[in-house]
Length: 249
Image (cartoon, rainbow, N blue to C red; front, side, top):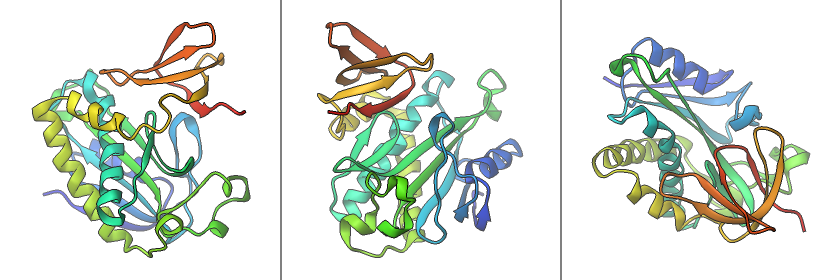
């Protein structure tokens, strides 16, 4: 039976969930913490986790998917968070490729997915979906460096949220949408995701994993989830990974 493990403090819910998954924890098992001391984002970035304010959780998935489809679960998770927020608050969340939740250009949350080795036994494969979401966070709770670029559900809605209820809604919807993905494929996911892509048509800068900086217009993700950018010379780039930002004017 899957279970939910609630912690007062941990270094990282993703690290805890990976250990549990390696020990055989089943699909849907989750870890949720009041705070993280070493919360992580993509590309090795830190995720600030003020105690009692945000949602910091990781959910173990054992999807019936081919390993090459596992990265698509990042899109599923981002879409789930955005759709649950809209259902509860009536707020329309934007999505930034591939994994961030935004309102009016300010970041509200992010997704970090990590998987087991994909060349092992199918029954041992798993994906951990880590979700960090600014929920009841006030402007003064943010580090001064990000106060101008971060937001929260409280700031956007003026509502104080029961974080456990929000977590339960997101977890339940994630498990439902993963099942739909297994049955219907990725196209129905990416079609819905594109409707929330707030960077499409915008000029952005991209620092590739090799350190090269490219500027261009975002064409949005293709049917495989790869981002396409057209630079000032009309050359189209396919972005596999890297740090994507709106270009400064």
